[in-house]
Length: 53
Image 1 (cartoon, rainbow, N blue to C red):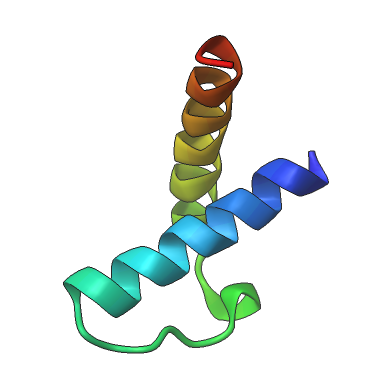
Image 2: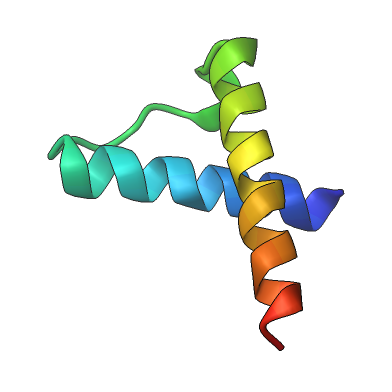
């Protein structure tokens, strides 16, 4: 599960940096809803990556 959280953090950071042109505050400061959304997305990306290996 630690890998999924790490992937979620990275995906969130990339979204904020690239698409919104701003650096993100600390992940720990994000609301639980944001963490859950990115966690769900990270699980989907991980599943897709495993399928395509």
